[in-house]
Length: 120
Image (cartoon, rainbow, N blue to C red; front, side, top):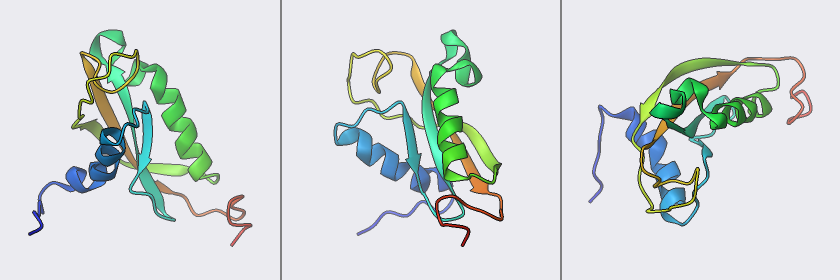
């Protein structure tokens, strides 16, 4: 039996990210729900270290978005997302006390010459 959560879109977006984390992958920046038109990128932050906008992982998340969309992107939605602890004690790894996860859903802008697809 499959549980359905029709009112919680973030659940479906973060499920792949949570699966990666439970599999032993404790990346600070995770790209998930990827399609040809966009994706969701999530990253770790600490409120007492500048919050989501001051996180050192934000720059990497923005780079992931720029790499995915060479012609630019539009942010559809952003906000705090559920974070799942793996119990890690490594700085910047999932499970560190006080760590939270911020998510940015984005869509790529249509462009003339997409480097990844050879302009198709």
